[in-house]
Length: 251
Image (cartoon, rainbow, N blue to C red; front, side, top):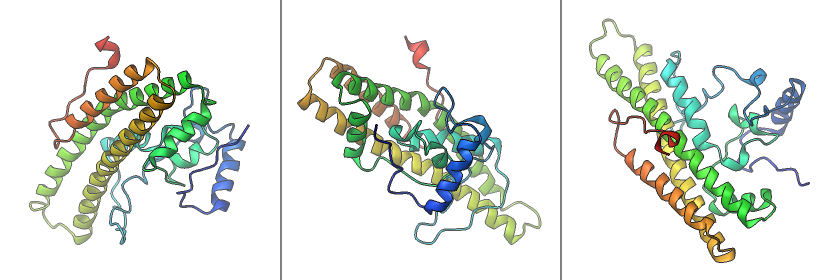
């Protein structure tokens, strides 16, 4: 069986990556029975790296302020919407959780090729996998954007408060503004990721329709349309975002 390789967009030296994976295996295994990161490898700040380096070509040093509960939750909820579905439950997955490599779905054909390969090119299995990936994204949207709404609302209040804080030091001001920028960057990353995910799902569905037509295509298209409708709803700025009813309650 072919062993999946880590994404080529990795930004870490192989020595660090291999050392980290070796420690993962010594701790037990990288993933639990349910495909989640083994709890022995999880720390409270596992996703703290998200949002840093928001200065583009000139990265800004991260804020030295401690994360609030909502800021940390924002990053934890963002990661599954950024990580490509085909990178989950792989031998290198835990390294991605810690930001030791970065991957995305900007390459739309890659999603189709990987899913076809993992499902052994079974048309029904590929359709089912596509539908599951789309539905998983739908279920994650509401909690992420509800949390994002609270974080952005708090940051708006934080920025206004800077004008009224007595004896505000330069360091305090700089770190407050950096954290606001980092939080905004997390939301921006998720927005871009959602756009890439929809495009990748569309690409895969179109190829399936012309190569292996199936009644499952209708279900896949309906799920994809639902995902797009949910994403469109969150294009407005918070704090107007509220949690959507779960799929279970809608059935």
